[in-house]
Amino acid sequence: MSSLTLSTKELSPNVPRVLIVLSTSEGWSRGILRGFMGVARERGWAVLHYHPSADLAWLAREWQPSVAVVGPNAVYTPLPFECPVISLNADRSSNNIASVVPDETRIAELALRHLISRRFAHLTTFRFDDAPFAVAREQAFIAQAQKQDAH
Image 1 (spheres, rainbow, N blue to C red):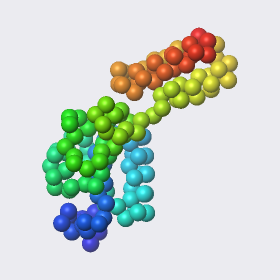
Image 2: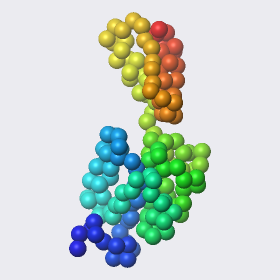
Image 3: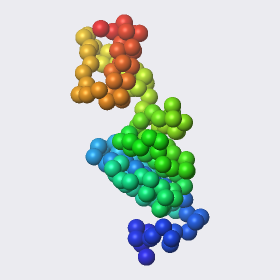
Image 4: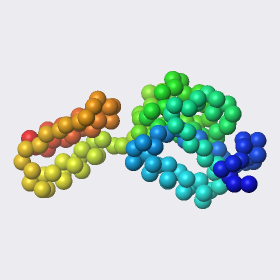
C-alpha cells in the first residue's frame, strides 16, 4: 500500500509524523514543501500537508503528529498541538514557538550593497501592503541606508 494512502492506525508508532500546515499559493512555500518532502523520503518520515484553513484541532487529535510545521497563515491561537511546533516565515517566538524567519537586516544589507555597487544615487522603498514581513523589510532597508549614509 502506498504511503499516501496509509491511515493513522496503519502507520508504525516509530515513524515520525510531520504535519505541515502551509498554503502553497506562493513560490517560497512550494519550495519549502518540496524540501520537506525530499528530507522525509530520505529519513522515512510520514508527511501530511494541509492548507491553513483545515481544522487543526482535528488534525492534531487524529494524526497525532511528532512535530507540526506551520506557515504564516495558520491563525489558531493558541495552536492546538501537544507536539513541538515550528513556525515558518512568521515570528511566533513571543508565544514560545520556534520560528524560522528571514533575516530582514541581512536582506537589507545585501540589497543596499547591490544597489550602491551599481552606482544608484537615489534610493527609495515601496511595498504592496502592511504584511509584517514587508514592514520589517522596509524598516530594515531604511535603517541600513541611513547607517551607510545612502539617500
